[in-house]
Length: 113
Picture 1: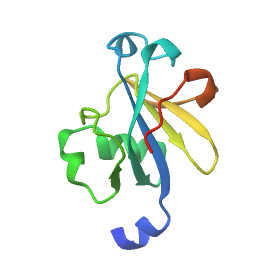
Picture 2 (picture 1 turned 135 degrees about the vertical axis):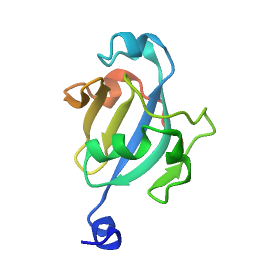
Picture 3 (picture 1 turned 60 degrees about the vertical axis):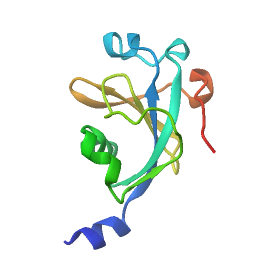
Picture 4 (picture 1 turned 120 degrees about the horizontal axis):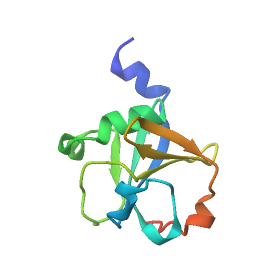
């Protein structure tokens, strides 16, 4: 299957970067870490969002829609992914992305419009 066909099945994820370095030490999502909505990413899975955004090369990818002027760094441990269509949330951990039961409201996520 070529990339054009795969892209048709992509889902839109919101990418939140943690603003506290403490999130890298303890990646359990917490309101105190402060999260900023930096981009929306079209991908087939949360794992694909991490693959697409885990290096500086992601800044120029067609799958990425920037929504914030916040520092655009590579996605790393402690950052969050939110799937719009199902309202599911994942946290990036050293082993990959892990689904979490926290709600976006409980974490006080800062949305960029």
